[in-house]
Every structure is written in structure tokens, then in C-alpha cells.
Length: 201
Ligand SMILES: CC(C)(COP(=O)(O)OP(=O)(O)OC[C@H]1O[C@@H](n2cnc3c(N)ncnc32)[C@H](O)[C@@H]1OP(=O)(O)O)[C@@H](O)C(=O)NCCC(=O)NCCS
Image 1 (spheres, protein in one colour):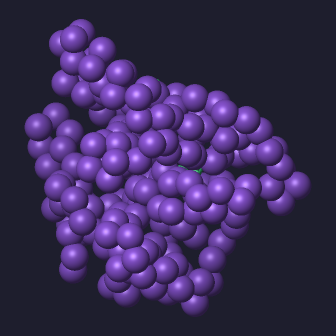
Image 2 (cartoon, rainbow, N blue to C red):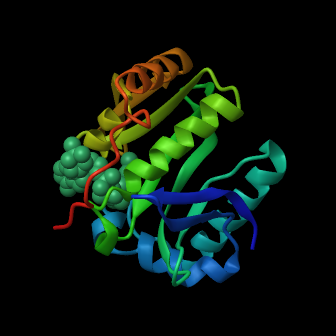
């Protein structure tokens, strides 16, 4: 197993490992991405073949670019609790880096996606030297939009995809670093306020 980044911490406790996808994660990704509560926002359910192709694509992304999306594993049990991170995409004919994420339903609203997105933006701007990062979401995906606003991304346009209205979000390096510096001056540890008890449904 290839660990791609340091573990995610919540309240000072390591809760998740960030690893490169491999075939051992197939069942976990199947359960995550084919859960109706996740699949409905990500273009529908996927066959095992499509999931295997996704794993291969992410491994190739790592070879080509030196970074890749993460499979997020429970630190204690090794269970797949989410996925996400950064990936290179072509958008409207331009190369971009996209932030994306999905969290297993039992883990939703515990702050996990906020941790994933914040770590990914930190990686992109501090270590990979990116100029901006985009995210795409359906207009009706309130959870995703709230998360993106929370981590400092702003609406940068709307577009239609598969006949449905979508929103493009973006954050630039300057905006990210400025928000981070402001949070630091205000005595917060991170770009977004992450302390406090996890929220559960
Ligand atoms: C979107 C998603 C990743 C959010 O994950 P999460 O771990 O629940 O998010 P967090 O707990 O970090 O919460 C982030 C913010 O979003 C809010 N939020 C989370 N779920 C929400 C919901 N269903 N409705 C409204 N707001 C929601 C949280 O309250 C929090 O904001 P707050 O701090 O102001 O209260 C998760 O719902 C998911 O995986 N959905 C299916 C896949 C998907 O939509 N991916 C994005 C495709 S573009």
C-alpha cells in the first residue's frame, strides 16, 4: 500500500490514512461509490470494471504527475471511509486541477470532507505550486456547495452537464494563502475552523 500524505487528524487524533488506490480497495470503493446517497451526485452507479479502471487511472495519474487522488482509510479498521483530493482535468479546453471528494454515508457530517478538502488545497498551493484549483458540483448539491464555501472556494460560473445545471467553484493561490494568514492572525490553527465536537446526524 502506498501512503500519499500524512494522516488526517481530528481533535489531535489520527483518524484517517491517505493512500493510493489499489485493487484491495475495490470492495470498499464499490460500497462507497455505489451507495445511492453518493452515486446520485456522481453520475450514477459504476460497474466493477469501471471501478477497476478508475483505480488504474489514479495509479497512472501518480506516475504521470507525482500526486494522485486519495483513498481515505479509517486509521483503526482500514475501512474505506471516503475518497478525494486533487486530479488534473481538462475543462472547457483548459488544463485545470480539480478538487473532489466523497464520504461514506455513516461518516457524513463529521467534518471528514472538510479535512480532505483543506488538506488537498494545502497540498495544491503549498507543495505543488498551483495557481488555482476548481471544483464542480450540481446546482442542487447543497452539501457539496456548503463544503466548498467553508474551505474558501467561490462560485466562478454555471454550466450544464448531462442536461443538469452545475456550478463551477474556484480558489486561487493568493485567496487561499490570504485566508490562511488571516485565520492565523485571528488565532485559528487552520484556514477553516475545524475544532469542536464532530457533528452527527
Ligand atoms: C458533500 C460531502 C462530501 C460532504 O461531506 P461531509 O463529510 O458530510 O462534510 P463535512 O462534515 O465536512 O461538512 C462540511 C459542511 O457542509 C455541511 N453539510 C454537510 N452535509 C450537508 C447537507 N446534507 N446539507 C447541508 N449542509 C451539509 C456541514 O454542515 C458543514 O458546514 P457547517 O460547518 O457550516 O455546518 C458528502 O455529503 C458526500 O460525500 N456526498 C456525496 C458525494 C458528493 O456529493 N460529492 C461531491 C460531488 S461534487
